[in-house]
Image (cartoon, rainbow, N blue to C red):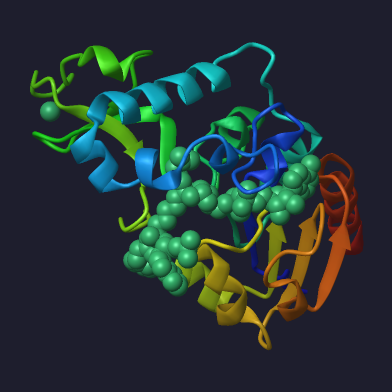
Length: 236
Ligand code: BJW
Ligand code: ZN
């Protein structure tokens, strides 16, 4: 019997219980800083120090020893390891908690805090602790590194591979995302009617009614239970 092809989409909610703030919750990042001041190409052109400082602080946060993958990240990494058929984990997160949990078939749509990109030669490299100090590019030596992050108005990464997986998937699960930011917010419309769809989120998201099924609660409870059920249902 063939197994369903799976695409899992995660958002900031999955890392909340690891101690990282979400964006749009009342205690989220966008309640503290304005998007237009830190997460657009215009902001970077206008005030690079501010933008580099914002991302240096976020990078320091994920390198804090207290910030570790939680039970939800670990359960998805286990699913990746044990699922012998098609599987893709697409994250909207710039943290490295899925990577550290051991996920392998993983794409970071909005880039990664742990990486920097050179504006002179385009080389992507491990980010030093402080981009605000204008360190040299490891490939060409230019002091023109920016965070390897997709800002508003920029094209998210790996979109062809993601749409290809969405077109083939039989099961789509959205976890810990409010469904406010496109193109990820449009994935449910791509797959509904053709694939089984499930939302796992603390509360109903913007697109909640488009999903066939939804479970609401903290990711560290919902995700391990869902993974255990799925593996058991397929005798894995
Ligand atoms: C829990 C929990 C717990 C809490 N357990 N759950 C008008 C219409 C349509 C589109 C546009 C439009 N105007 C402009 C656009 C495009 C724009 C966009 O979508 N704007 C909207 C705001 C309208 N998008 C873009 O510009 C994107 N680029 C683009 O579209 O290019 C064109 C293109 C498309 C397709 C192919 C090719 C080209 C780029 C978007 C870049 C997004 N960047 C950010 C910042 C990244 C950098 C950074 O981190 O600083 O990405 S914004 C921010 O939002 C971040 C996130 O990935 C993204 C999504 O947020 P997420 O993850 O959903 O977090 P929250 O906080 O919103 O929700 C958390 C959820 O968790 C909540 O529901 C909680 O309840 C829940 N939760 N604790 C489980 N314990
Ligand atoms: Zn370079």
